Length: 82
Image 1: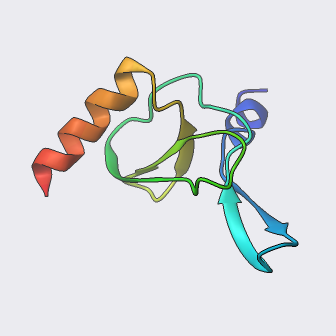
Image 2: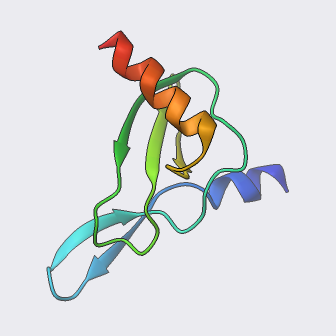
């Protein structure tokens, strides 16, 4: 079940008919921090759920709640490394 719940937090692609372009949106947030985050990006404003996609050292991506303290810390840490 751990792999199932983790896979639900991955970004997924959907098509918006009005724009005719793929849009990467998150539908659930990860419950736990991703170890060794390497980079991040925000999902587009057109998505229903605002999210930060955090990319780990292995390339694994998780959707994170931008209001959570662990997400803010991870973003600050990654921003300092740039």
